[in-house]
Length: 488
Image (cartoon, rainbow, N blue to C red):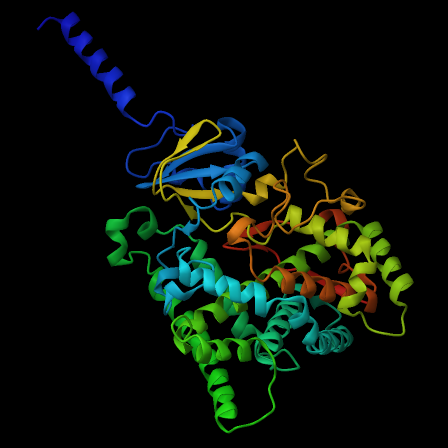
């Protein structure tokens, strides 16, 4: 065979392979052998994918090890995935470390979108997070925020500086604990908060670490990085805590006590008695774990980011404080019902969640079948990520997208409840965060109470423009350097 015939055969083979390969998948960078594009993620995948989208477009494909991953970075592509084709993307890609927890199939965040998941979701929407249910328990949350203010007052007198993230986390733990269990899970002096913070953050951090078991499924059984071994004790310890609380409640119910707390645990135990085919003691614990972790961690993170942004922009902080004093005065504490009369505070929270969405990459979806999105084919079984962090910075929708400007939300119809795809800090569609109604109440209540009760300053020697705002990437996006501030 002469050289020309050989070249012709190679050319024909190349054309055949091009035609037989899925050339209509979204574009993306050239993949390296074996690892694909794993090296492009870096320590801040939300930022790395944002930069790659500038090159390859708002819908792009990366091969991460052996996993085809499609990333959506615009409102249009997010809407196609989360609304137009939400049935196709109703399942999750479950990380190996998440699957190591007890009864992972009973979680709300990670379970398949089947009938069992729909029943748990319906329970959240119709009984756990209704306005009536949350209103009936708001007095408990008010008590917890009063404890927060007392604690800051004591701490401010003794050590002058307050770790905002730490006190916000301890308070968020108690806010959600009282809503679920009618009981504090952190003592009034917050001395036990660190154990729970460590447990929750270990789960959130390990869940987001690049894991060879996820990218190379044949290696899953070996747990080469030891992540499954590292995370499981945290899951087990939280289940032990929940078991203790459930045991006490069941003993009280068995004794014939007529006093009911009316909290979320009572609702769940009622379901175990009335609907045993879907609910049992073992499968309500993963649901409680989801609510507990997501509610405490994300609310605390958002509160810390909000305080950091306000301290960087003192005029916005003073504007927020003046609004609070005008509406509430200095004679009483903030209540959840006050928030409707505080438009600037609401704008501060919205702007914080735009710049610092608690979940920068929405939990990964999985394509049930091939589907056309914006002219490209997303192949069956592909992992699909929606970059909420990037969407909140899209200059197509946001002027000065990197600037903290609460005023952009004044007189704006944009909302975080999933109707506006250019702004989806809680996700949207059937997989939107079920605890959104509670989380929003908690963040506004904590932030308003801290700003009304104290005039905050940065520690001596730190100028507002010098405040470190670096992110630490995990399943949630925490502030890398803890925020310390002085309450006056």
